[in-house]
Each structure stands twice: as C-alpha cells, then as structure tokens.
Amino acid sequence: MTARSDVTAQTDTARTCLTVVLAAGEGTRMRSSRPKVLHPLAGRTLLAHVLAAVATVGGRVAVVIGPDAEPVAAAVRAIAPEADVFVQAERRGTAHAVLAARAALARGADDVLVVFADNPLIRPETYAQLRAPLAAGAAVSVLGFRPPDPSGYGRLVTDGDDLVAIREEKDASPAERAIGLCNGGVMGLAGAQALALLDAVTDHNAKREFYLTDVVALARAAGRRAVVTEAADATEVLGVNTQGQLAEVGAVLQRRLRAAALDAGVCMAAPDTVHLSFDTRLGRDVMVEPYVVFGPGVTVAEGATIRAFSHLEGACVGPGAIVGPYARLRPGAVLERDVHVGNFVEVKASTVEAGAKANHLAYIGDARVGAGANVGAGTITCNYDGAAKHRTDIGAGAFIGSNSSLVAPVTIGDGAYVGSGSVITADVPPDGLAIARGRQVVKEGWVAGRGKAARKKPGSAT
Image (cartoon, rainbow, N blue to C red):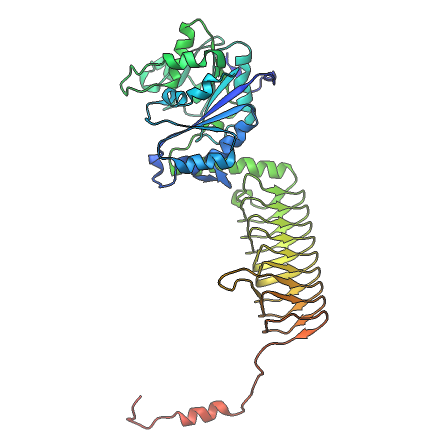
C-alpha cells in the first residue's frame, strides 16, 4: 500500500519545516539563453510557481542555484526575500545539490522537503501530504505517481506499506518494469536523520554522482521506514526540460485555470482558446469570447463581456463593461461600470469612468475619461513628448470628435465638445466647443484647369 493523496490526516502545524528548492540545473535542452527556471508559465516563472506553492507549507526555504546564476538569485530575492540562497559549485547529482544547503540543514527542522524548481504543477496540499508520514515516524517520504505509460520513469518497489527501493528502468527486472507506480522525484526527509542520510550517499556509480534516491536504501539499512505518498493526479509531477515540455505543462495549467473559472460561473464560448494567468480574477457571469489573452494582474467584475481577440494585462474591468473585439488593455487600465471599449482601442494607465465609450480605433494613455464621455474613432491622447509622459483629463459627458489629437497635458471640461479632426493643445472649458483644424477651401473647376495646363506637347521632356 502507499500513502495516497486522499489521506485526511493533516500534518501537525507545530512541526517545523525546511524546504530545499533545487534550481541549479543548466537547462541546456531548453536551447535558450534564459535560465530554465526563469521561463514564464501563465504569467510567472517556473521558479515563482514553485516558491508560491512551498510558501503555503510554512517554515524556512533554501534555494540551491548553479554557479554564475545571478539572475536566478535575483529572482529568488524578489519573490521570497527571506529565503536562503546557496550555490552548488559543481553539478554532481541531486544529493550533492541538497548538501549545498548544508548550513540550512544544520540549523535543524522536524521535516525537510526536497523539491525541484522545474516542477511547477505540484499543489500545496500535495506537499503537505508528503510531510504527513514524517510526522508518523517515517524517515523518508517519496512522491509517487501513476502515468498512463511508465516507460522511462524510475519505479517504486514496495512491500506492503513500505518503500523498498527506487529502481531506474535500465536497472529494473521485467517484473519491476511492470510496476505502474513511478518516482516523482520530490521527497520528504525526517529532519533528525536528513544530514546523516545525505552524508552517507556515495558516488559509487557509472556517472560518479551522488543520487538522492539512494537515501531510501540507506534509511532501510539503518532500520528506518521509507514510504510513498501518491499524487492523485499524475500531471502534478510533470517537469520541464525542453520547450515542448514547457508547452505541455502550460497546457495542463491552463486546463486547471479554465476549469476553476468555469466552476466560478464564468462563461467561455471556446475555453481551449482562452489564455489565463495564474492570478486572473473573473467574476460571475463574465462572458469571455474566443481567443482572449489575460496577462498577469487582470480583474474582471461580474457581468462584463470580453470579446474575441482582446489582450488584457494589469487591468481592472468593471461590472457590465464591454471590451473588444480586438481591444488591448495595458497595465494601469481601469474601466468602470458599463464602459464600452471597442475594436482596435488601446487603453494604458488610464481610468475610463462609468458609462463612457471609446468604440473604435482610439488610443487612451495616461488619461481620465469622465463618466458618460464619448471618444470618437481615431482619437489619440498624445501623452509622450519624447522625454516625459503627460496626462489628459476628459470631463464627464464630453464629446471628442473623430480623428482628434489631444496633446497632453490638456484638460477637456465637463460637457465640452471637440470638433472632428482637431488637434487640441490648450484646455477646453466646460460646455465649450473647440475646433482646431485648417479651414476647408474649395476651388471649383481646378481639376480640369490643372489637367489642361499639365498637358505636354509631343516629344517634350518628361
């Protein structure tokens, strides 16, 4: 038997925990100049997903990075400033990597979790379940899973409730290869024995590396128990070593996020075409049409509609608002109740107040659009002078005619009217009319006269 993920017993909250996050892999198979663990997934990095999950476990965190990995160290400091960072100067196996955090291990903890920064799908509750056998006296708790096809994975050999061995496929007998329970890599160690077990690992193998999996045999040899905690969902243990695997893991995460949104009362006409971020917040009765992308930091209130092919990031959409199709909301965009932002409209660092409309082909940047105002097609808030950004303030009920340029800093008063095609460089008072364009001149018969004058004689130069 194995300790399954439906175990109801909770880890004693009084127990202390140290989580060692291994982030020292080179990631050469990613074929990228970016460190593997800093690749993005649903709005944050692989590393950030893992650090967020282990933060719910509580206790101390130590992150082991490779040499010359300052970008990773900087990311750790930004995400989890309280975490300790250690460098594995030489890459000599997983046990060697854990021992790079010896100083953190020596400080002691009831439980030690060893997790991997390229396993972003493991849920916080799974980490908690991994600790439960340690509280019951086990020395080692290994995360297991049952993939549809176990080929290529190490098998977990059990005897009743005990884990006997972790057998790599190349070393497994035919009977062991038939085992469907596989090694997920993540492991829990009893804190009192952790350093002794890790120090006992040798490099007596073909690669001359120190393997974390050896602690199972070492624990049993010392008369201590090793057990398996089985993940309820095999996709949890999916790791990332290639761009293809990153895409696969991303697809799993998107399915989770969409399912949660649908369960919360969001309506999606074509869920598989909608991309969500880890922190996307969609209210009840929000309608999301096909091919919408939600970047990080988006909140959409109940009853709003996000139409097809729109892109939102760092934006807040109010109740009943309509966005798109083909709209772009950039960071700092705030749309209040019943706002309409239509096709090919871009809003950045601006508040569009209740009931205002910008139905097509407009740019609203660093601005306030007052309640009930109308922004006509082709309107641009000219917010950047080449050196600094400036604000535009459009009053409540104002009407901005089509193809107008509002050169910031400028204020359009409540109820004011800007004539189409105007370039506004000065404030417009409330209820005033501003027209700033060249006067139309009509010259009758000009085309015919021009054509006659331009007629060339045969053989003349062109």
